Length: 158
Image (cartoon, rainbow, N blue to C red; front, side, top):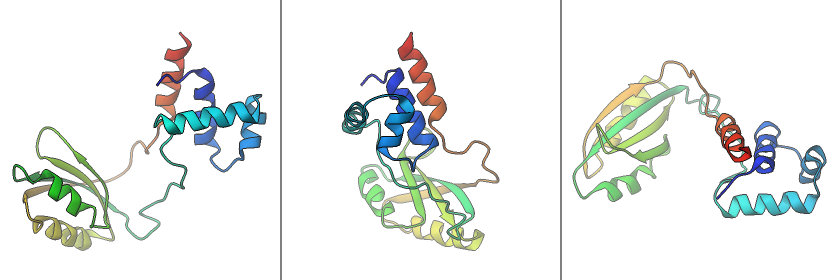
């Protein structure tokens, strides 16, 4: 799907002012409400917009320790292990990867002891061979998409 400059402007508003009404977005963009709604519907249908929920802080929820756990899986068991990871609430993301390991998970924990407990649960999952853990010390670049959206918009304008 192609994102044009108007789509980029719409996405920028959604990112910067997520609690604004459709009517107000249309007013700010100087377009008809129906045009805005059609574009939003298209971007949702095409998978550009994948959600509208609030961004939450694991730290504010009492889980300030962030770790990345690499998981090596027995061949042929990747799907089973991936499904089992979904049952671990402290895992907030999991990806199949190339390189050292088969899966990369992002884990939120209350403290280091809790992180160790989570890792011990992961090690005991059928199909898990070993894990390697890296603890994040400080977030240097928060999760963001606006720079990418703007880059795509600039490319579309050319």
